[in-house]
Image (cartoon, chains in turn cyan, yellow):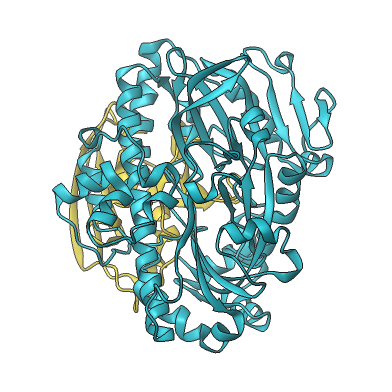
Length: 485
Length: 140
């Protein structure tokens, strides 16, 4: 449990840890949490967010969102912005799974239409979207095509028959982040990634068929903007990232940065905080490679969506277009990006690291696709496979307080081993079926490890970010079918 | 050659500690732990042999690179191994290894977790009281 006596309470939902908390802090740290969440937060979060506050070139504050928990170097649920000239870039502030993120697509089907076919549908998706240890995807691309994917992400998909016309605009950054440099990607990373497009992976990654929860249909007017128009509407949510490609880029550069810090005279409080000046050769090389992984992850989720559209079409004997299977949005929650923000009375480009944190741009921001620009960016927050997930929108207050960032999910409270001791995969599968959730898992051990009891209560996380004004609840979505990698 | 899991180190991931009488055996123990995380090794056959030669700056980085090589073999070549024979140079900066295993077969192999990467958290080799020990945390 965190010792909070020296923290300054800013509101019912936010706390400041002053610079005096630890020698070397360049800025204060800020935590978004109710008192209950704060007291339940592991001490690692406090240690880590204050370590991040010590990094060179950090501006304003280091942030921990309501879902924060211990991670490598940076806490998961952590946000930090750095001056692009004097600041650093750190793989530990992004995570190994570069551009792990969430995607939400809608359908015009209702629960009563999907329920009788849920087993058939989920079994078909499970066949079309490979999941689990060492899986390869069905899409084969050449080396030059893979280079194009690294550079242009979902734009490449749209030009190569792997996306609908309006898909790229409904992805953060319009489907690809600029600044990719495939020459900075190792041979090992390329060979790990080239066959993995359209695969889900394992761990906490999932693909879920969901339905609008009528009891938590918070803002029907906002929901309408996303094409969510009825209280038993079926949607599909995808949680995955850049697969082995991003993991290898993370591993490669963690090693590079471990050595580079000495050369740049940087000392950090944890080896996993390895970093280099953003303006240095190592910093630029990593950014160029990291963007390649981010664009690969957008592509990976896009290819999965194409397979999901195919599965719905085959199961319901209608074209995916007739099922209105448009992409609502795709958000990153493990990434660093150069963004323009206003803070301390100025407007400047900063390098925003979001690790287990979601962009939450408010109404009117030019980076939000036109149909949503008036209401704010869609924010997709995934819960455990038993508890459901949330759709929210970004806010002006997020722009003012957190460099346009919010929480990303729930976070574990129990180890994988402990979860396996508590419940057997097969028993969990039966229990979920009794509650109306049909689960298909690559492994039974993996399923047990992801049981709902192993995670924090997502509702409290979402409620905190909503009441703090950082992102606004639109609708909760409950699972009816789940594919677990 | 032994390893044991450290369940409280990283809630979302898997940590282990390995111990052996020599550096080579320590690498073998770590590799066996990595295998055990990805698959039930009893379901694997030692049908294919893979030779691995690596050089690095020091023993810590050599272990990091060795484990990464095995993770890459899982993704690139769909290979999982159950037997390892590792010889390290006296300075701990290079190795020659043979790993035996087989191509992933989803019907026959009892697969577990897909390992993403070796982390630097608590990572390192120690030589204490004539025994070699390593702590490794893997990102799942």
